[in-house]
Length: 319
Image 1 (tube, one colour):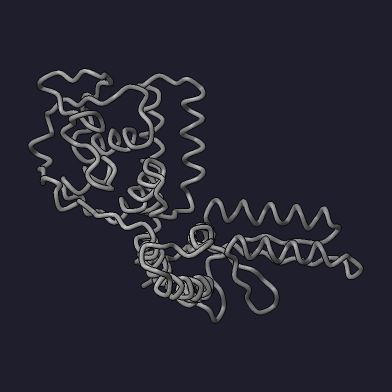
Image 2 (cartoon, helix red, strand yellow):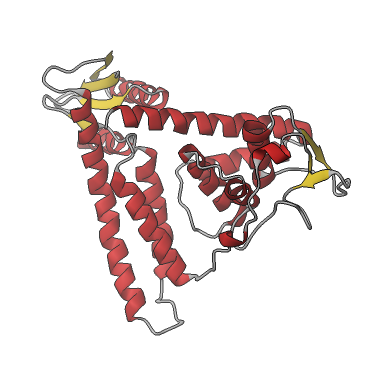
């Protein structure tokens, strides 16, 4: 496995503010510190760019910086390095866990049916912090999913909703492989994700039409009286994933992103959500056609899916 290493030095008479700023940035990027003052990140594109950017900051402060890529550390193998990253993120997640436990006690102690003052804002801040940590949780620390579950349980306690996923009628891919599909024009996140899902898992050459009036032979999705639509508090994408029994683990992050952008119920916190939502809004503002929206959306979701597949493979190799 390849790693990025960053080391720097600032003039002895330099003000403390650049040192503090660099330390905070390194922490925000998820870098771990090794003996000798070197910082390490996995050799991923975003990590390489982060260290290169920091090197520029050091040079502007009249200091010296070194960025290099290595594939081996003397006396420290890949598994040990991965453990260091997971331990660092575990500590971050545990800090959130302590606050969640405090909020849970507050909810239990409150009067039935009444939310404690300020608890919703506190929950939002926790979700934001969790998303920040998850963004640099390069090797899927198990504590992250446990904390995410705790956040969802707290959300459920504050805003009870019945999950109606049990009402979803199972469907087989073979039965829909030659079907023609239709959904509403001006597709946004849920419809774009469904269109990608259809082409990715059901039929790469599927015919998908955008109209408010389905033809008798067409399979409609995410529209009035659709074959596939929202079920309970699940968006259409989640419904289709469940109906077709798609248990690919790398689909889960996408379902959470689509759910949050589409329903905005605070159920999931993913680090990519805000950026993806901004891109989708930008496409609509730019006035892209339905075909262009689908093309861009398919590329976006395929990229997300591929990235999560790759990350899972890298993580599994090191277990």
